[in-house]
Image 1 (spheres, helix red, strand yellow):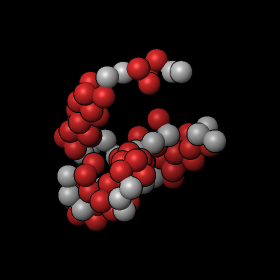
Image 2 (cartoon, rainbow, N blue to C red):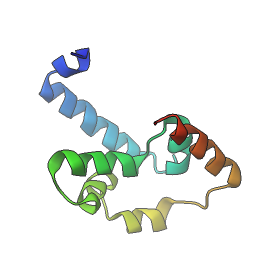
Image 3 (spheres, rainbow, N blue to C red):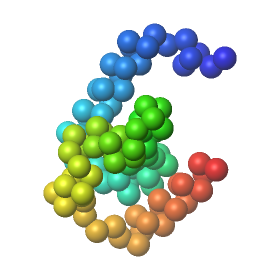
Image 4 (cartoon, rainbow, N blue to C red):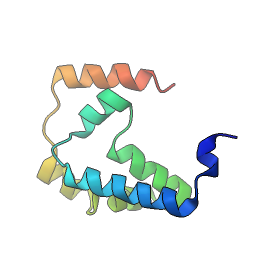
Length: 96
């Protein structure tokens, strides 16, 4: 058993909500950069919520973004550079 499995659900839920609120606040942190550094982004987090909750991906992502993904993308997402895409591909390869 991983120590994380022993974490109180209330504490885990509060930490998760804090993470989501932080990501909502830091709209300047682009998903492609998150993927390049950590191998996951807001979409991944929303997809994990959807899988855990048995709901459609769009619903999970909307919970994370605080709005429909298409709206967030139009407001905040910039065009990815070739360098960002290369870093993302290298980082995602480590997830396997």
